[in-house]
Length: 120
Length: 113
Image (cartoon, rainbow over the protein chains, first blue to last red):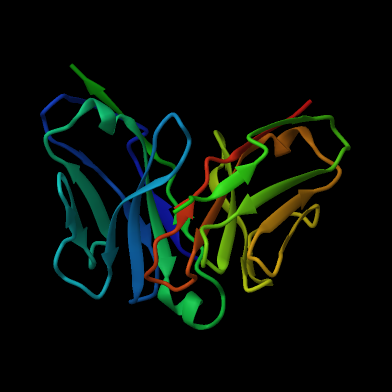
């Protein structure tokens, strides 16, 4: 079974600064997707960024980028130019391609989350 | 385009009762997944339905069940409620393939007293 670990329960960053959230995962599979989701106080999970394991290039979405190290099974999220609206709980998640292709569905396995605080 | 709608938003039930939660996915999405979120256990996968069939089930007791209708709307049911069932229940809809984004609803906050 796959596991996702987020070792930083809380992080703080000053507005306009850069912060990196860590995520490691454990899997024996070679094909999978990794995601970062944001959960603000409204509780609605919002997709921040997605990475396909077969792609060596790190994904970027505006101020958000990832550092994907497949051999190390590491998937960190970098937020540049942090804004007050970035304050939220951030979850790293894993999805198995094999599981989807074999009819087992497309469930997400989540880490325990990192609470990000943005300070003025 | 309407998002994922979960009803009700809040629910208070007594131990031993049963509860039904509803999720209306984004139009066209055939996959609906349910997750339980608690401070102690985090986000845990309950089950996923695709075209009215359960494709996967998490490690939850049989008191937790679900179904999906022909219009892709899904319901989950919890029977004989326990205090530990108090949680935020999140529903996610998607096209159902590995590379597609899962869109989440705002959740149903269930409190068991």
